[in-house]
Image (cartoon, rainbow, N blue to C red):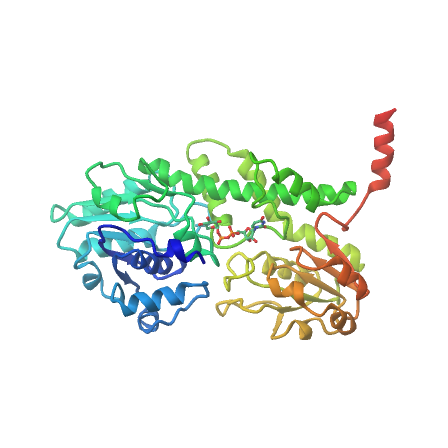
Length: 456
Ligand code: UDX
């Protein structure tokens, strides 16, 4: 954690109301309080409010508990279920509620409009409502009409866009070290928004539609980068090249950049899958076929099936095979399992007849029924396993005792989809390592013939 930036302060603190105490809302509320603002966080779940008011955090997010505790203690952060209390002194409300995808890929904005209407009905003064949730271009304008209609002529309501770019597991660090803050404001008189963040932070001030689209396009581009890396890794294994080296070579070009070029079991989480679908739906709404994004989504959708097929080939079938699965959360460092590729892969393996026994240090499956067993130790998961699949990039999976694992397993095949293991250590343990872009299926013989033909 960069404590230097964590001590950043705004020069003129505001009274704010943050609606929603999920990943985005809770982080925003605690970090904005840390910047010096007075924040009321409004949350409908009364149990959550009483936990949070005692400094207990219902999610795993490094550094967040400390911030909540410190700002509860200095009275700059409070939690409530009562909208009137939350909005009493606040002229700015930040809407941080979910925009889950509907069946057609469009986001469902009903939680946003409900949250905004509640604030409008509870307020006796003009409001600036800031949409932090990811929404299609034009949403802020549409919400403003709805809110102004709710307010009738009693108060004036302006809606602005300030999309959130925080990554789960790095959210606090990201807040205090932003690459950019995007503020979409169509009404120049809303100067209060200039006081939201320290003035020396990298702020891009633009119109609302552009701000809304920056968020969608950023997440779509990240998804495209990952799908490209995954396809490239597959190509590497077909032509006998090493994906790690190829991707490092590609990413070393500063125009491309090395981040988000790591092959894996596909992208997951609450944002990338939802936002690429939302981005494609924005295009469809104006008769534009966003083909690059559609292809990236297709690659990702097929990823679990493709990987399961390759595991099946190596193991000589999946029926009645016992597979140990390490990892259930959608990425390492978080307990979140929404759209987790690890769970998607487990479901495909079970569907194909395998018995899956999974271990994850933290994953919260929110009481969702899962078609496989979950155990409390990686060493229990691997007992008598025909194959071991590592599907989430938890650091601890690289540090396991693979000599011991080799003794516990029935088979020898390890499918490391997240490049966490040391090939030498696995080799010494007598295990066969299959990594993405390394050893799944090398067709170098046929390639050699093709190359000879080309050379002649
Ligand atoms: C993402 C965006 O990064 C963030 O800006 C936005 O606000 C919310 O969505 P998050 O969902 O927390 O953040 O996860 P992120 O770290 O972006 O990873 C998304 C998925 O991509 C994960 O499944 C991850 O494992 C995968 N990934 C990431 C790869 O497969 N390869 C990579 O190189 C990077």
